[in-house]
Image (cartoon, rainbow, N blue to C red; front, side, top):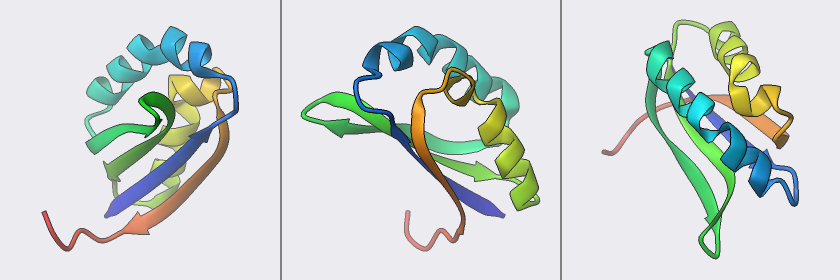
Length: 89
């Protein structure tokens, strides 16, 4: 199943994102379940993340999200996890 994670950064936490970006990208690569991902932008500055996972269960998606270095660094103000269906693209 595909699962979308919509993560919004806490205000003023760009440096936390920058400091943990390498670990986050390594985690994405090593996990093998990320189908697509990228940051939300506000006037060019990163303010959150959209991550689409291909996993068997929502529990796996929740575990992936909890172990993300960004989440572990306390970057996110909110994380929405929802099953998602690809229709176009």
